Amino acid sequence: MIPPLCFVTDPVAPQPVIAQALAAAEGGAGWVQLRDKTLPDTEFAALARALIAALAPHEVPLIVNDRVEIAISVGAPGLHIGQSDGDPAAIRSRIGPEMILGLSIEAEAQISAVPAGVDYLGVGPVHATGSKPDHAPPIGHEGFAAIVARTELPCLAIGGITKADAAAIRAAGGAGMAVISAISRAPDMALAARTLCNAWSDT
Ligand SMILES: Cc1ncc(COP(=O)(O)OP(=O)(O)O)c(N)n1
Ligand SMILES: Cc1nc(C(=O)O)sc1CCOP(=O)(O)O
Ligand SMILES: [Mg+2]
Image 1 (tube, helix red, strand yellow):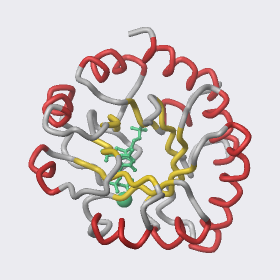
Image 2 (spheres, rainbow, N blue to C red):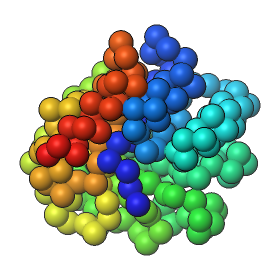
Image 3 (spheres, rainbow, N blue to C red):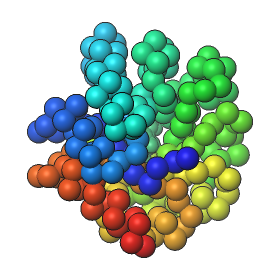
Image 4 (spheres, rainbow, N blue to C red):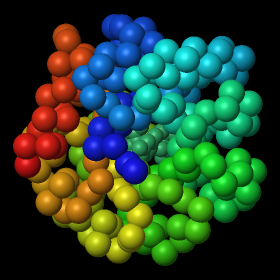
């Protein structure tokens, strides 16, 4: 089951990553993804373990971004990979059948290459965003809807997502929203997460 709100951590936000994750969980985020492109592996693994423990009382699974071997070594419930992070079928073989596996989709043409073993898609960027400077061209709500229409897999919209996007994403058949800054840069992160969840359920 894909939760309607996935929080992706922000290593350069005012609040520490564990505080971000706990506030997001308190506000209703159903998954937290640990994303840090520069943290050394040892520190990343320690942070992943700490997050798994901190999120356990909330029953929120941790999804590890990019780092396959760390996801395995810390026993993470999930892993998210992008188009240039390796072959998804080979990665599924490596992680085994239990771990949640997400794959990024940036354009409709990539849908035909999604192998069995991928559990969900992260689709975007819907809008331009400063949180991923190397992002692909924005696809907009129309592009998101076109991708959703071509797959049976649940799709999380990502990229500049705010509460204003919830209705369109849901109407397009999206499974939910993945956000960084809408939560990490909010003055009250738990309230921001709750507002996103309410925007989803009120549509
Ligand atoms: C839910 C979700 N969707 C997409 C992404 C982007 O992953 P990727 O394309 O590998 O880019 P990086 O996050 O690694 O910069 C994601 N992380 N989460
Ligand atoms: C991590 C990430 N992946 C994207 C993609 O399009 O694949 S956009 C993105 C950043 C999302 O951050 P924010 O909610 O602050 O825009
Ligand atoms: Mg990646």
